[in-house]
Amino acid sequence: MEGDLAYGKFFRGKAGFVSMEWFPDFVNVRRATAALTDVERAMLELLRSRGSLLSGEIKREMGLTKPKTPRQTPLAKVLEKETPRPRQRSGRENFETAITRLQMSTHVVTADFEYRYDRTGRRYGWGIARYCTPEDFFGADRLACPRTPEESRARILAHLRQILPQASDRVLDRLI
Image (tube, rainbow, N blue to C red; front, side):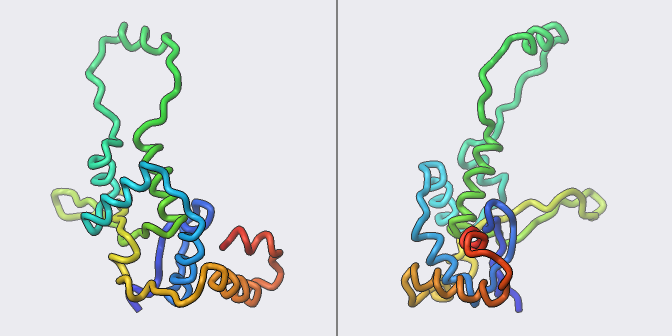
């Protein structure tokens, strides 16, 4: 059924699905231990205020796009390459880190992937992620969890032990 799966980079930065039967408990556990940075808080507030945004829209709104460099002469390019500069994180790296951490803490989910179309109407390229909060995507009432984070963790752990009996407790804890 549409809308019964949450999708995002939930598992150590890797993408996966969590069913709505388990997602409220998952949110309960993950948010109890999440510590957000200032950039992540600002990104989350932007998403809450706008409902959902494409990744490029978030980057522009947050000022995480790389400025365009003016054209250079061949000599200027050679001289620039020879001048050592300290490595700086690009806006893309800052964005990727922040959006992944927000997904791992269950504050953000991937709502959809949208595609570009050429002038003849054919879809091309990779899908562009549209992000939103789980509350906007599913509704806050569907995320309500009557358990404490510890009870949710125990419930998830018992379920994982049942479906993955060969997995060690350490592996299961890393999944949660």
